[in-house]
Length: 542
Ligand code: GLC
Ligand code: MG
Image 1: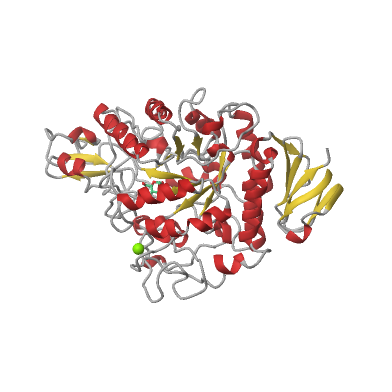
Image 2: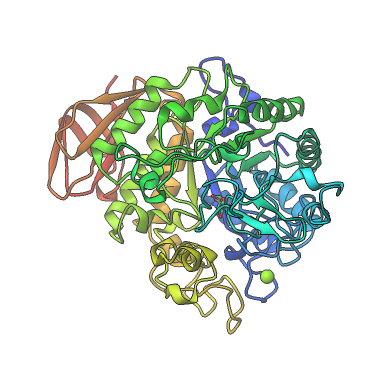
């Protein structure tokens, strides 16, 4: 399944470096391409669209959950870890996707959800049998307080208490998300062994690794102590929750589990990789997830960056913070979009095409692995939807319409035709299509000035220039509202993250790619002037 990994300078482990040099593309399988006209994207649909991904030049694909699930949380409630959701296809379809992607030099990452199962999982169904059930201790159970209230103050991330009473046994079970997503008990060695087997099962089928859901959260405080209240110093996301999840999640013992998984991933040839959803909003908490000397996650998503505004100072500070803290053997990862946070064109760009182009250029030129979310390459915005119709349970449970994640999970736009090339004309897509005429792959393929060509050309530039893949990062002087940095010896990147013209001094060379494509190839003689929300990669004079 290996393509031909390109070499890196610096004597790193070349065979395992595809994920450092490459670009990863996240696919929400229900929304990418529907091969059988049932309105639901599926694995065969993805395989049929690999031409697009090969043309785009991505090196890896992360698939959101593909396992059987009652879909209370759209696949993040897993009912069987070693099978494929029938709506998405079969194990054979997944094998075919992995093989076909591999032939084209692309690796496939699956989504692993170890924090919780579906309540329909056989383990939980058995656990409901009572105190002596074989799988009782696979989950986190606790007695009520004397006044019959839940065992502690922990809150579900999806609203309400994190505990639900099982009337039959008189005990509460823990769920940091939906009540239909009971948390697993990672203090139980049998849970750990079961997941060792799950990892090996999928590695044997040829996947390149996993994106691991809620990595930071799987181990809970053994004594189930109360979470403390948030304080005004906490990140706004933590303040909105009202509590710091220091006991319900984020326990130091998670690192034992990560070391165990990394050892399994490294035992395979080629080595498999682990990418963590490490939802901590503090860089000092993020770094330990890489372990010591590369023995935990290969890549740990940076949610401080995901949640930052598209603002020069805010983003620069986070990048500098990572550059300062990350050990030399570890590797950053950058993304601004996903199936929870929204698409680049909306989340960061607020619908402004210039900002969306700038965001893609930034991601492709930082030191680290960029992750794009499907549709980012065509500047696809979130689809405005009525929260009253949400399929996502979160807005309903929290009463917060803005937490509806359906708008960023709508189908991909391949063409302007009925069905958008996603499904057959006339078929009812599982989520509304939105306006496929505004942004679609077919039209943008014909337009060299399109976001699609910009994304492809940036990926190709990154592949062609060792500086852009592996070169060191160094902040360069830039006026307020702008951000400039050098990559390696031969390249600089300048972004104007403001609505006024700026001039970045001290650059001499030639524009390799600018967000305004008319400027590609322009000579830079000491200063680069950028219009509002413009950016450029400059090849510096040697
Ligand atoms: C992660 C997923 C999100 C899911 C949650 C619970 O945050 O990204 O989509 O709802 O975990 O599994
Ligand atoms: Mg289908």
